[in-house]
Image 1: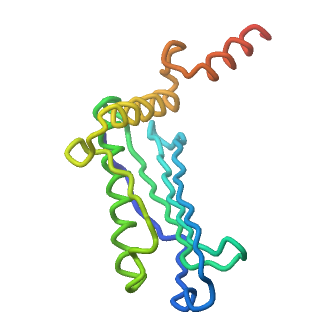
Image 2 (image 1 turned 135 degrees about the vertical axis):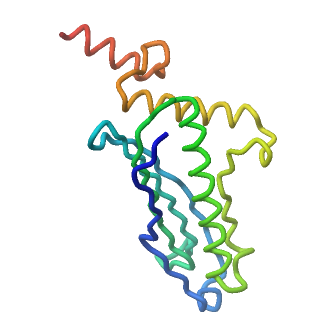
Length: 168
């Protein structure tokens, strides 16, 4: 993979240190968003976002509200190897988020229950999970490059392609 550009941007962060004085309960919500786009000069752009909120279940008051965006512009050279590198970048972004939350939520981090996504084999015992995530990333890269075969597509994608071809 030839990296043209990469950066991680904090889009939103709020922390209310007085939250626990006002509210007794917290609800945690955490998810990620990952997608590829076509860039310029045979490059591709990965956008990977992390959303993490801790709030009151009975109001719209946030204890913590966090959102970051990682962007990687690259030229794919070897899909399999580059997919592994992409997973490494995603893992680093997750660990960076964890460190940021630890450092910026004072003594409350233990209440947050932030779970960074770990993809490295040394850190994770679930090899099926790693294989599934790697396969997903390989397919995402092939999809944006236009080289994903019918056999590699999900059942939903195959159904869509077959319907589209039958309509033509």
